[in-house]
Length: 532
Image (cartoon, rainbow, N blue to C red):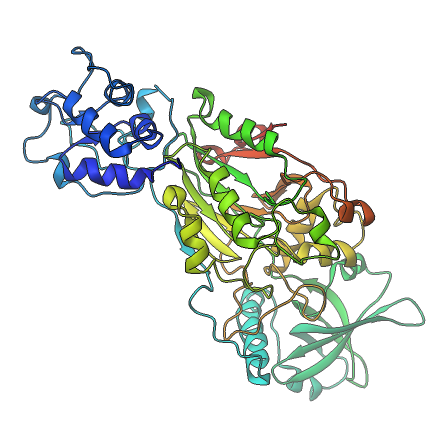
């Protein structure tokens, strides 16, 4: 029988005036008859207590009498003006098994106030806040006006990131300036080509027109041209030719993340597991690795891991690539999501889970991708997971995590030199997206982009963590103090992957210690767990 939703149990207990240990909630959720177990556990709680403990839950599930000396929270030791039934209810999100007094859990209901408790770590878990989600806001119809709107929005917002660095002029104003004048342009890269002499000619477009800029091959920044993608926004400054028809570039700027950026951190010891690309339904889904991971999450050593962030491709999907049906062990897409939902129930019932879709999931392929529809949400209702669009910025314990599945990484890796972006080091390609302040800058390539009134792919605010998947390779590092993680996959090599020379990294779970992101050593804030 599938596990009960922990939030339902917490709410039921709260309606009766009781708080609960998180592990007790998990035990009740696993009971064969949850309602009977709840009744038995409540009968086991002494009249003077308001907290249901692990012992009460276990004894109820085992259909045995409660131990009289089981520890309880005595109502006489609490502020009489506050009762458990008066406390706000929220979905539990703290892992089980931690006996550290700094991680006291309360079953998802606000704790009964106690005199003298000032430790900020003894508190309700914080439900993730979401920003930048297109779900419910999509307006694009595919008309020309939609494309015009999204590119205009991209230009206005990203040019704003650059205007403070250069004294730019619109292209039509630059055209009217006399030869030899100093000038600067903020524009969208509309063309890049090399000259017969090996120099680089870049056409930059703004809302007024297009102007050519020449980067000489012997300039110290000339290698930056190798990083340019069509449709991204850059700034250049230099000197106009004698006839005023071209700008000789002296400096080139990306919107970029400030080098002085300092990440936010959680104010208590708490961690998040960042995973992606389960591909349930594939014959190569590594069930053993997943079960080992889920079992580890139940161990005391993992009690600090309170959040699970899944970066897309929950299922293998149907018809995603040629002859995919030959590599499926679950043919129906809805059956794939049913199976995924069952695997999700293996993780502790009190974890806070956040999910975004990927290109194998049953949502539109064009990005930004809205979150799953109501039918799929109902199937994946275990744990009351937070389901949001791709991309989205998720704030967990005060830490901003930009979640993007990562389809555009294929394009970045294909276009840029190997030392700047490769499948073996996908975090470097992610660093390029941070530099461009856009998760999918190039339009018209392999990455399908939906025209919206607003460009949801822009990185307006600097995230503390950038989490992606898609390429099935593990990679992590920092870019201007932003932690970049590509979290590999849970699918062994398929025949299709072998044909395109993809050797996946399987069964990795990066664990980010959210309270330590400001440490200089990555070993202080990131642990890579391996399973399978």
